[in-house]
Length: 227
Image (tube, rainbow, N blue to C red; front, side, top):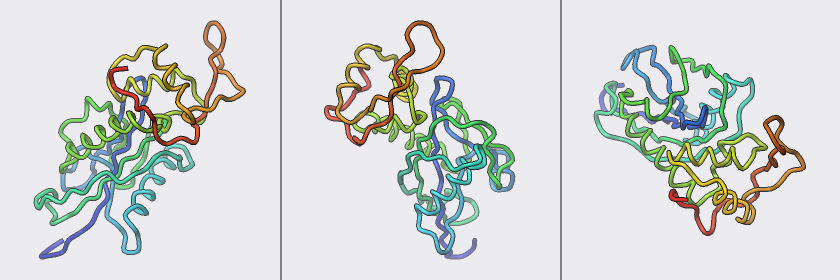
């Protein structure tokens, strides 16, 4: 890129919960600039693509590489980043998107990366470009949205227990939540959870009830991080 050319890119903040921790998907760059550095997955917008088309394509490629199929999760536009010196190759506007997904197997491949991996959010400092800032903004957006929306279920498989859902909130908010208080709040919110006829396998005692995500998108009253 030279002169006054202005490129448009999409960077993805892809979050999941695995092993009890909120994790982000990172790729290790194989080529300059920042060769060898960890970064968020992303790429430039193709001539006939809308911004969301680019984000959805990149997310589908990542999840299909991990599972053989594209994974349905939550995808939304996060924010735009256009600091003049954010990319040493020239002026680049990045429109970041936030994706919330159930846990995916490793490795997650990326054609422009040497290595791809899930990393706990607390272990992601020192990313390429301005990706530390973008990732932090995405994490805070996710934490805030869990207070007033039903998006926590995006981190869960299609059927899940109340305990599994609670562990999502604990991982994202990085706090412990009283199990009984949490169960009462989420089961009393109209349209948040829909009981199934199935129960979880394994474990001691009576198997736990399995739920699906209901039709509601907003929580009223909202949950708080001080449950």
